[in-house]
Image (cartoon, rainbow, N blue to C red):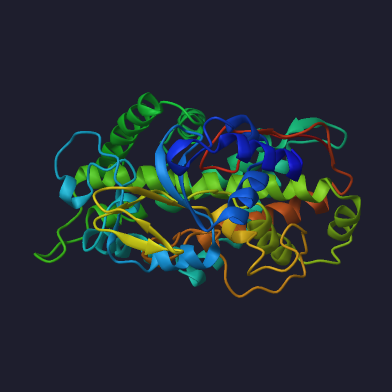
Length: 405
């Protein structure tokens, strides 16, 4: 979609009472969310919207306004409970610590954060490279393959399974459930199926394991009056969150970067000759096409001023547009140009504040190793057709990406 098409779509979407109806132009959004976000930015930093997934909310599209929201203490996380007990602890929340607040959020996060420290992630590079090379060894020059199916998601899902220590997870089924949760629509059946599977996997792991895996260590961690030990519901939520977040964003990052590189002969030549580092390539790809377009929802507990707009209290949903922030022309020069030499000190591609993505370093390393291994092994790789993207409000992901090796 051209920029002009985006502006026309946005004009048509302006409904009564100042609500921008993105659901009405959802096909334009799915086709080119960047154009839609650009049109929103041009008309203001904050908008009352109907999202493409048919949720009414406030959408913040300005980078500095987003940073203000991240620092706003009166906004709380928006949990999605499945009806079991201990909601105040976040145990029944679908995504656990991602959708609960302090003090429980910090208590849960501290249980797993040590496994994702930069030094620990750096130690994983040889293993990531070994898995990548094993997957690439199964492919042949000249083959036409779906790079997501044969390489990107298999690498990232296998790594997070190993990090957690849950080898009994059904890879095929879990990927299917993940796919059903990232697209717009009713994902309740997929969530319930995934949690039921994880309950069985975790029970077997706790019964039969030797206590050394990450999932066993956090399950067996002693609690205190101030920080209660993790209950089983919370453990399921933690495993579910880490498994999805631990492979979905990195899969998207790898696939999005391949599409960008192969869409420009000049950039592809630079990557093949390694005149640009793979680390720089990944960092610019995070800005240019972030793997997540929107945050999870924040909920207002009282009126809050954002970008000159007062958002009412009483439970209004607020979403932050990472996609728009990373191309905000007020903070990024030539924001619609892909420049792997760009120097930046801050990014919102992995969120911010207390809920900043724990797996940011892992996703960066996986993408760097994956791209380096891929382009060194198959330097003549070409797109075999346009990517098939998910119809999603939140995820900037690719369902299938056929390439000729």
